[in-house]
Length: 107
Image (cartoon, rainbow, N blue to C red; front, side):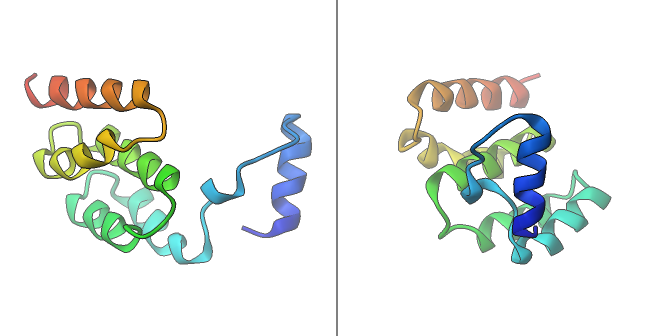
């Protein structure tokens, strides 16, 4: 996303500060476009998570949240996300995520 576009978008919404670490980068566009076409593809989500395993913790956490929302019954995604929950930046959100995962798998 172009830097000018980010500031213009922030001005339109009234938000003066946007965490730029959470915005998609050029490398993310391939994954994001593919997930727009097929949001329920475990293979694509898995590749995206693998490619971003060394990014900032907050960004990884949000990526896992999106994957779990798209694939609530995926044991593979939940199991991989569980260790991240224990080191999450907001403990309350981590436990909520774990509960949503567990509920989604047993319904």
